[in-house]
Length: 276
Image (cartoon, rainbow, N blue to C red; front, side):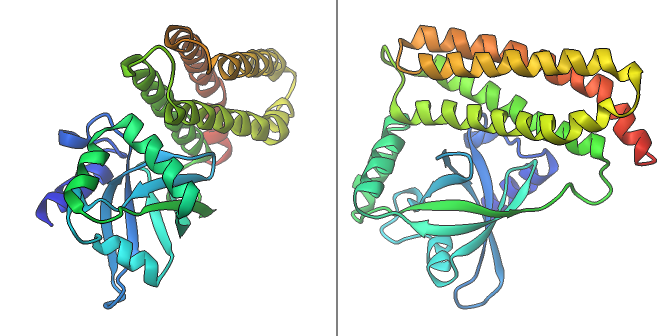
């Protein structure tokens, strides 16, 4: 319990970044409602991306012969709070079964053979739970629209760096199924974010006056360029690993330049409008 609390404290103090065994990995804080006590119970967990609105967590309990408390809590109350370090949202929990469980488990073992070791040690079927987002909190209290935009951007910076590191470290000539899902999830998230900006934020910024036209023209063009790179990456996912890595690297550089410029140009305006 003390070890978990140390991770929780470090996670919350550093916007989801921790050291030790979780350093550089995918980590969330999952808060469930105690099945007997009704009290909130928070646990740090590794996870697998599974599309834009869903992640997977595995009830391994380190290979224990019994399922972890958080799993029993979700069976009693299949809703939970997920913290990513940048965002907090409510999620609905579904225990996977049959072929869906088998496919998810195979992807997990493909990424980290340690899951298979836990399975052998546990002597029980290890459940896989899907957490599907049902509602997102807004920016934390006191944050401006500019800070909220930077938080969203930091999420993409973190994900791009993680995907690039995963592809670089992967073995074999081509990507495995889970790494392809990680890439596709990141691509989908960027596409959705840019679509929302195109429909809402960017028109509002253009309305600030003619002086914004050159800035918005450049941002629009960068959105189009990034959309092309996303499409090229998706087409490359079945190619050899080096080709995928080159596409991810190219996309990362383009996105980082775009995010830096967008923040430089738009955040002062957003903060000024909010009185910050």
